Image (cartoon, rainbow, N blue to C red; front, side, top):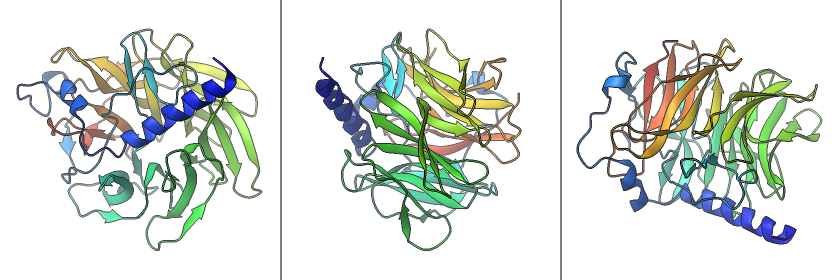
Length: 348
């Protein structure tokens, strides 16, 4: 395949991933839900104190199964070649710096926008964007960062807006393939994923100087400190893996990999010791592949599966005190591709 053909293939795949976020209803999801009624929690999850904290049926998670990518390493999405399972990986849930509020993507009229609600329980949501957006995070500067695709799925750019008030939007990047922005802990650097001909890579934008730097191969950066981040890479054999990158020293360490599964969307605990992520899993109930929540220490030890429901559980983030995990799940919506926000205890 020529370079131009590969570029066209990857751009086409990107368009497919983007458009999947805004499809109102998809019959493919039905295969993930068992035909018989299953409780919202199951025996393997006893002790997690699972609680649904939204009920607007608008929050859309990674419930759209993707087609097999033409290349593993050039694919911007989750991969488990062994399981023949591929999924979207955009961040769709974020916690405010004070830990009191959650931002998430709500889909209405085939357009995704950022909504904010209280993290403590059922509450009224407030809409903060009025475009077509995806991949939201909440910076320490109290701004929402997201990728905007209002001008078409070939043309995603990074934008920011005040999380609490106003409607002014600041454009951060000019490339047509930028997604998943996240601010460094000191608020000086914005990391984001850029899809290029050779595959996805992590870039940084110095907010003081405007300097752009290509940091490492991968996507879905999760900063540890101002010099290191976690990210996802798709191996040549077709598994999504979680890596730790020190981009100043040029050091890269594999944290989590499994020949049977893929892992994406890493989120770091407040004490910096634990990672929670979503990973592919085969349900013992439905016998079908889905996404569950997993945890592992930052040194790669004590790998633990947290959820076991046959529905899709995705986009985990820690509470500010590290005692709970918020995540998206369609476990209460068996005939829909939309999700609710859930909370569970973190007991490790």
